[in-house]
Image (cartoon, rainbow, N blue to C red):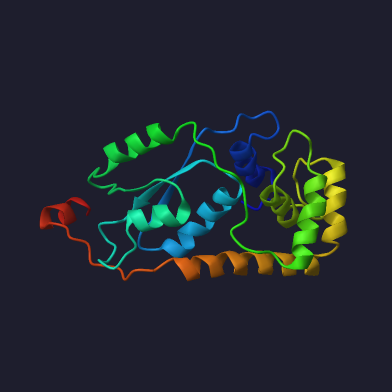
Length: 212
């Protein structure tokens, strides 16, 4: 969700309801069951921002038997996780029910990792500079620290830009901050997620011919 261009800014603006946009009541994230580590990075960012989520766990028909179950992931992520198979429609009714049940849910924002003392201090100072009509959270402040930089196209107030530039005065400082955050998030994922082996898909000859 880090943004530098106006096009990239659209995502965070829509999710948080910035610049006059209405924030969504629910975010449905599709997560590939055969590639959890890569897919869950976005889910973690959304969770840190306090977004109400339902996870559609895709590719479950191609994940090995040792793959983490929807129940295990739901407990870890603290949100509904529904296994679905896109090519057959399996699980879609359950996904619709989960979406209906999750509408109106609330989640408190909070980081998935413990920032270093220096990063925590920077987050706190930037959080105080967030506009009054923006969500006031560590996650939003961290987004600003990782996004606002010289040459970006973001529509942010001058006071917020100034606060970020004081904390991240040059490209080297920005790279160090990015490295700390990305590494910390992946440490969380690696410590909590069991990556499965990929199983051979079970498909009939007719299905395989139809795909040609």
